[in-house]
Image 1 (cartoon, helix red, strand yellow):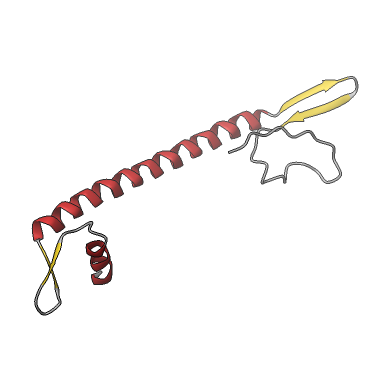
Image 2 (image 1 turned 180 degrees about the vertical axis):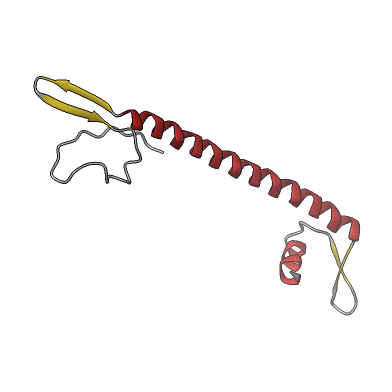
Length: 106
């Protein structure tokens, strides 16, 4: 804690005065102002991460709904199955099968 506080003072983010003894002296109001600003940023980042996670989970649930229906097309004696899934998990595709993969970058 002390080390990071000194680093903030050296970078002139938090005001500090050097006492005759060499110790750094901090203004309590300045520290509280920094703390309030830091907490606002932390809460905002946390909320953004939660929203991203919720969106990812919602998308996964939607993909699972589509995939459970099992989109199967039979044309000219062939059977085609459409999967809407994460390409990192290929367990649904049998070995030695032919497949066309369409993906989008993250």
